[in-house]
Amino acid sequence: MLALKSWGIDLLQSEKKTLYSFLGLYSFLSIVILAFICLLYYNFEKDLMLQSKRPLLQKYADELIYELKQLHINFDKQRTYPRFEEFDSAIFDSSKKRIFSTMPDAEIDLNSILYVRGEHIYFIDQPESYYLGSQYVVLRIKDDGTWRQAVLGDILLYGSLAFGFMLFVGYFLLRLFLKPMNEALHLLDRFIKDTTHELNTPVNAIISNVEMIESEPLEPKLQKRIKRIDIGAKTISNLYQDLTYLTLGHRLLSQDEPVDIPALLQERLEYFQTLLEAKKLTLHVDLRPATLQIDRVKFAKLIDNLLSNAIKYNRVKGSITVSSDKHRISIADSGRGMEKAQIDRMFERFSRFDSSVGGFGIGLSIVSMIAKEYGIAIEIDSTPKKGTKVTLSW
Image 1 (cartoon, helix red, strand yellow):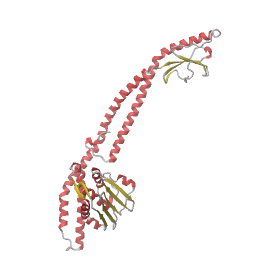
Image 2 (cartoon, one colour):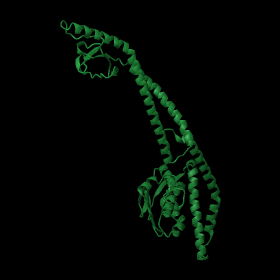
Image 3 (cartoon, helix red, strand yellow):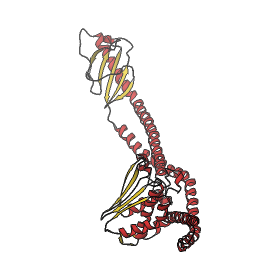
Image 4 (tube, helix red, strand yellow):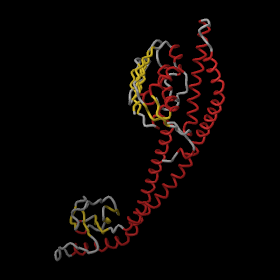
């Protein structure tokens, strides 16, 4: 397979399947066309060889017919069927019944004139008169197979060269096919980079100022409005971080360190506290001591995306359960759940199963990327209309 990444293209899984399918189909059709051409070439060379043998076989047939004529005339004196060192022979009557043969086990096709079968060449002729009652005379000589070896050698050599040339052409066809997709991805990448750069400063300013507002002396309506601003700002901030990781994450060096799992989970739960309260979700926490050697920023991003999904896809007044021990973390919600087909596709980039909750469908793709980097296994247990449980284990 051609290395797509060598062209600077990072394709979705579905797009890769489409392109690999194109390559597979193109290769299959190329092989079929070449096989058909090789078959035509083989048959042409076989016919050419047979035609080159025909004068000799006709000479042998004339000799046999002459001997049959002599035997027919002198049958009362001599009754020995003529035999020759150069070829085997047989005679058949008008009903195609065998009269005599020096090749009794051979299957003869009397409807043909000249053909190859196995290791022998067969030639069928008809005498002018029915000598000894024969209408057909059959000759068989040994086929040394040199022509076949030469033809197969040519087919192997030129067929390989032709297939290589067709793959070379297919390579450029694929490049041509990928060009508009490549340009679209570059435009999208540039748009994401420009957008994230412009979002950073105002979002941080909003969050910082909202956090400095003392809500207790304010009226309940004003408190609610400030809380909505806080929710919106944190949602945009989370999206900004996802987009930043998506465009720059593969270039950032990991700075692994021992991370206190319960402390990190508590920190991220506090970050999402406003969103939890807005949806009136009940939080159940069971955190046991655990430490993991990992990049803290990346692991926080992984947890944030799982918590964000557990909140977004949950029902109002639902619940979220977060638990951890030495070797795993689990985040369970009481939301809408997923079908198995959705679970199989949930880590594909830009996959979204409900447009009403917003987002670009990149969060779980980032979760998968970080988990693969550190060998963290992800297990999904989901039931439609009952909820989803995501377990990370290491």
